[in-house]
Length: 171
Image 1: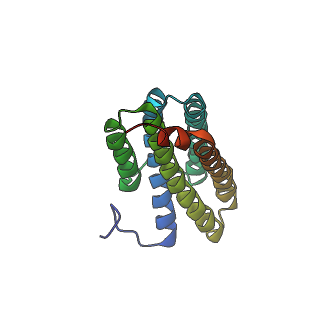
Image 2: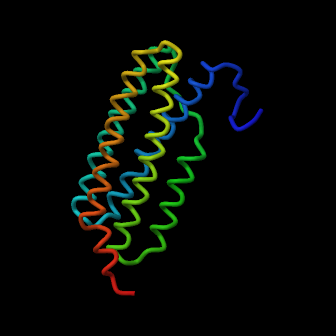
C-alpha cells in the first residue's frame, strides 16, 4: 500500500480511484463555497462564487453520470489535496482583518482550487480516452471547460481590481 487508501493494481482501478477522488473534492468544494461567499465583500467576487457553486453542483451531477456508466454507486475517497487547500484557505482567511486583503486571499484560494480541478479533470480525460471511455471523457471535457473559464474569470477579477484594492490598504 502506497499513496492511496487501497492497493491499486490496474490502470482502470487507478482511473476509478481518480473518479472517486474528484467526486469527494467536488463535494468538499460545495461545502466550502458558501463560507467563501459569506466572507467575500467584492460584489463581483461574491457573484462569481455563487455561480461557481451552482456549476459545481452541476459537475457533481455529471460525475454521477460517469459513475452510472461504470455501473457504480457514486462515492468519494478522501482527498488530502483538496482538504489541504480548503484548510489553508480557511486558516488564512481567519488571519486577515482587512476586507480588501481578504478578497484577494479568497480569490487566490479559489484559484488554487480551480488549478487542482483542472489538473484532475485533464488527467481523467486522458485516462478515459486511453481506456476507451469516450463518453466519460466528453463529460469530463465539459467540466474542464467550466473550470478553465472560472479560473480565467478569477484572474480577470483579480487583475481588474481585487489585487489593486488589497495593495492600497494601509498597513
